[in-house]
Image (cartoon, rainbow, N blue to C red; front, side, top):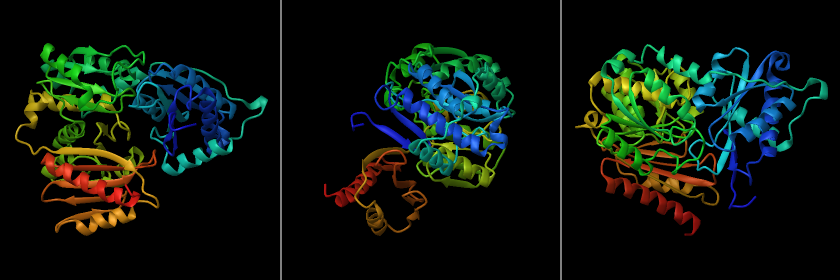
Length: 466
């Protein structure tokens, strides 16, 4: 493989370019590695149980999910295919089925259309721990042990996982379906031809929304860059304006992230998804909130206003989930639009996020732009740069030395420097999936956010000789 055709192997799964580095052979081998890992730890070798294999809508999904299933069966475990559905839908199906030993989801999340990959789920419906992910990775690299001819796993299918997800969300006490139905808002929705199209439109309709949709055919042929960042939501903004919608909702291809467009058609950033959902939940159930070190100050502002404990974990959904369990959080998630609610499942869930945000808007009978009026807003800058030889420790030290008085430091995951009074922060951390450093800064003033990122990038460049 070459730099032209990347292949990412990490504790959270694999991703690659379809037909180049992400092939049926790779998928089958990884399925066998996952299957053998689960088999060797399950009582009775997993007899009488099974592994779920699902996918998003990418055109390569059917081929690769069949290959993954073949690998799991070759390891001696039964398989149940769950078809096209959002990642949180598959995870919830695993959690709620007592016979499911875990799950494999064929998806490349928000990556462009030529990518695909695998995400790994444990029996509790959450992603596997980093340690378990590394163990599975080792089995993949070394070659998993396979079952003999007389102990191969059987195949099968499970239907209605999407309907199950919708019903579980509607049954949540924290979702105010009555308020949304009484309001009957017009909602613009962009599913970018992804798996969200099999859940989100049905959920919104059941909540009494009048849906103006684009990209609702889950054929995996993304018409744009599928990541729901502001620069990719122009068409959704146009639909909000022409339809007179109160809000625009955009999900990524596997529907674990939700981004918002306000009632004027302007994107407001993914961090406000979690901020609004958190604000709504805390009004009804005060308690601890958890997000990661790279998420916006706006989420912390909401927790502070509610006078509840607020915690930041290392970056990564599994790490956020672990801290939410440890701190008994009432809500949490990541600032990329990933909302996690313990009442449902400790995974990022865009359909759930949509229901919570709409409940909040319906309570106030207004759009997100009006809710933002008068609040402190922030600019976030995101960059990535090459990992310096020997790591970034010296860059961290230089950044610490020049930090002004009043700064606080967190070295849980790289280095995060915070200036609490100013509402500014800088986070420099090694990527978990690429040989790069990620630089993220945020401040109320755009120039200051850029300055912080520039400063970090300059210190890293000095170590690489650039």
